[in-house]
Image (cartoon, rainbow, N blue to C red; front, side, top):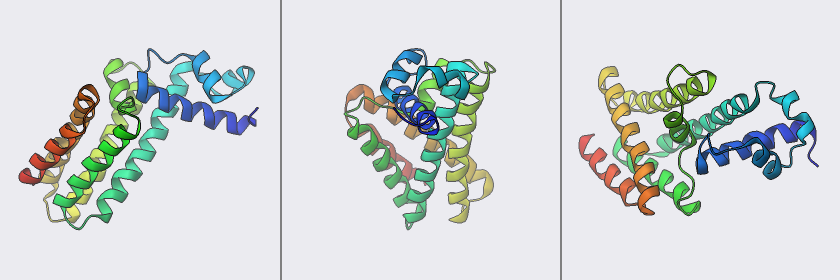
Length: 187
C-alpha cells in the first residue's frame, strides 16, 4: 500500500492517464482507487472536493508536463519551421506509444465541461492558454511581432489539438504530419 503522499500523487497520475483515455465522465473514483492503489479512506482527506478536485489537479499536472514538453521541444529547435515539425512529431509519438488510446486530457475534458462550470473547466482553459503563450513567446523570440505570434500560436494549437483528434480516430499519425507541413508553409 502506498504512503499517504504517494497515494495522493498516484491518484493524480492515474486520473490524468484515465482522462487521456476516456475523459471525465467515464472516469470513476472506484477505478482511480483500484488502479492507483490509493486507500479509499484517505481519498476525501486528500480531495475534499471529490472527483472534480481530483480531475482539476490531474489537468493541472498534465498542464505542467505538456507546457514543459512544448517549451523544451521549441528551445531545442533551430527555427520555427523545425520547432513546429518537432512538436507535431512529439505529440504523434505520444499517441502512437499509447496505441492511439490516449489523447490530450485537456482537450477531452474541455469538450465535456461547459464554460463557467467550475474549477475543472477553468483549469482546462488555463492550460490551453499557457501552451499558446509558450508558443507565442517562442515565436516572438524568433522575430515575429506580438500580434502575429499570438495569432500563429492560436493556429498552431488549433492544428495540433485537431491532429490529436483525427490521429486518434484514424489510428494514424498522418494528421500531425499534414498539420506540420501546412504550418511550416504558414510560418
